[in-house]
Image (cartoon, rainbow, N blue to C red; front, side):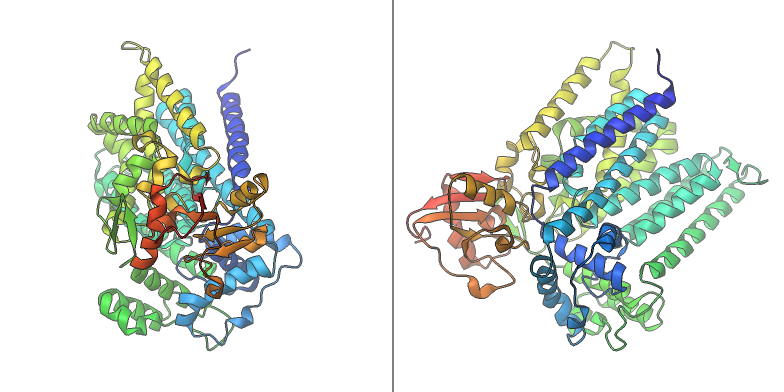
Length: 588
């Protein structure tokens, strides 16, 4: 019996959902919290439960609140927000909040119980993004090319790595793609459904991450392109007629932009409970715009934020959080292939994309871009709605000095996969000479690269650099080691009857919570530096690969760990922690 198109559609998405959830959940239950997750989770819960927005204001709260939603159904969660009241905003944001989040998650509560529930909410966004990608690809290329695109999405390690973490990176990736998809549909037909989808995803993006402001000029540019085309703009809204003149099309574009701006403004206020102050404490307010150091570094932006804040045009936490994020992005230690810099490299993100993306995806994406550009009408009508957002997010990241993680260009990935559909469609065609063996080979190679890293998706590096075991020679931090493998270290210790270990751990998770008996070496723990001492030797020494490379260490501490790079580790935990047997001090 031949299946109908609707049945094939449903079966394909059902299989995708089951496999995708299995791969993500099966991975995240093995891993400890990554560096940023405690702050995101505690910020989301405090905002959702207590309408308090003081914790980690560097991002708008929606996606964190979404992640914290299951926690509302849990009893006995302990959190004392009154601890924040006597602390000055600058001291709180630059230091106090990290200790507060650590103690709330690991001392007062069962960290994994809260974290796993929150991570699953991000996984659901991963399923939503896959559905959006499949729908767009099916409308462009047909069912089978769309199914292949969805297959590559399902096994894409960078997608899998971040769609299971309680951060803002995947949320803005999902919502930005939703904006582009419904904008493309709107450009083909003005209808209530398409406009609603566009507005919904646009407002959710603005309420989730500050980088979503890039979507404003992208939407404006694409609507102008559509309005300037000679073809009539079909309308399916009540009794409105199709837009046949350029003036009517430009007017419609202007109305859409104005409506999106208004909706985003309302959504931002709604995300902050329609309250200007970040909490119920009447005298607690963020005023980073008054800091002389910030004013000196970015005077124009600081002046604009100060004016907006003074007139209460947006919530205080939103204004000052945006400013705080911008100043932190001005100067940050970074590591790239053996080099260290504070002001970054313009080519950091293109290089990271080339070594952390499956080779098959790179090949298909490059071929897809070439094929899309070869036909002008196809480019203007379809491909530009993926190319322009991709270029905007990549260019914005390249212009910043914040070179710490590929996750900052994560929104590029679903667009790259969609554009690969042009090449997949050509390879699936019957004529000219069938090229399906090439597509089969690329699919097989993608599966091989996936299997080699599964389930440690965060540490994925492609075979251009020899795979994940060699990744830390090129990139660290959230590209390879974000503190995710404490559970793996404890499992290794139990399997090898190791009762005590010397540990230099890059992360915010608590080794004590996982029962790891250790001597803390320079590099951690941040929440109790009095416990840091010299190693207990002879014995095993476990060092996170970010600490091995030492981008955030002073020169003396970096030199302390450097000799270990010449040794063969006794074990490598999840590609992020190297374990060595050491008889005597190795740095002398």
